[in-house]
Image (cartoon, rainbow, N blue to C red; front, side, top):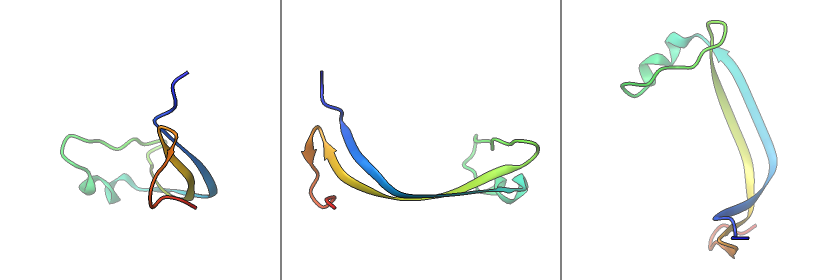
Length: 66
């Protein structure tokens, strides 16, 4: 079985998602893109986490150690 290209461990995950009116975001989109909405609202998310034990093809990646 081949090694995965990228492997890592996610730790200390934080996720914050909140609804906003689409008109607050539409002017920030690149041409040709549209917002996904639900019940007339768009959503913005902030995600933070520690990306630990990062390996590329099984080899520890320099500068991305714990």
